[in-house]
Length: 298
View (spheres, helix red, strand yellow):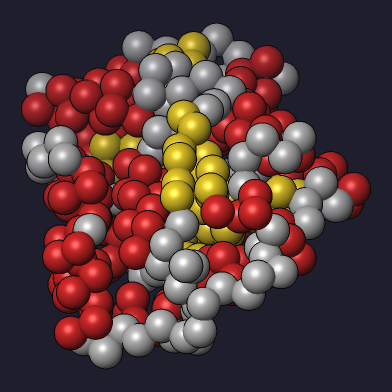
């Protein structure tokens, strides 16, 4: 971290006065949730490096999505950078209403999350949710999802259970982000069709010959699942830890920036910290904007 600190200073990343003595001692250690998606893993890794350089200690808890929201509501986790909306509305809203979770910032304003299809089926006419059932045999009756408990999986399960769009005889294949992508990449290599959960930003949009499906507005939102990603915190975090809360309010990304972060990992670099550090060094103007006016903890 000394080298990173020297680099930050070299680019004029000057800190303000020491963090106020009134900031709670609990704020010395910031706990972040990571649900295992590459984009959230990498934005969390970036946040940890910046926080460490500001004098804070950090830890990450790897949790399922439902457990993440429960841990935030119970005060066991401080911050989560992966609140995809509207997909996670049912998990978040009850806690927002009670004040047990608070929103800090929209860290990525324009994203996409809905079902997608590989090129062979799209060229054959699978363009809409209502078309999926017509391709049941070619799809082997399968829709590929990510980890169990994910809200996107839940919406697909609801459609299957209620036979919406004629999907009653389909099966949702749950695994993980990596597991789903492995299935879909093999299907592409073999020239087979596949329907799966897709999102942007993610390098899959460049690596796969994929198309997003229309017609899922009720479940994933309009405009092919257009969404936003928010940073949320446990209730009372901003009042208790104003310096760190301001950092997270300043911390926003772009689709291009997140694609760079994810590509570094998905192309085989298993050292996420090194990828995050290199990304920080390559994006001085963006990171400089985050820490302007933020105090360094002594």
